[in-house]
Length: 67
Image (cartoon, rainbow, N blue to C red):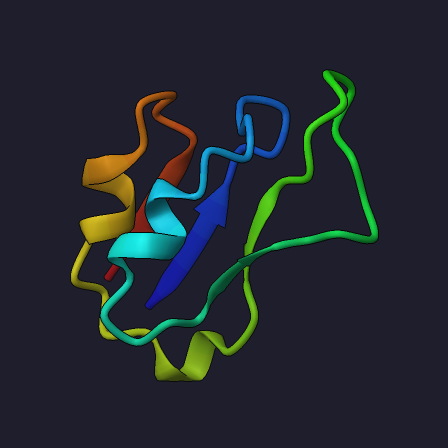
């Protein structure tokens, strides 16, 4: 399974961070997108269970979960 983020659409709202049951999504404080936001990233993709909560909660449709 794979989780992909459209980093240019991400506005760093952290809804995906809050709803991830495995707590493996974080904002990348070392990078910014062209809009000035820190994009969300999965830090431990091997722990992802592909539940899709992150994609469902994203108001900007910036997350895609592939099983």
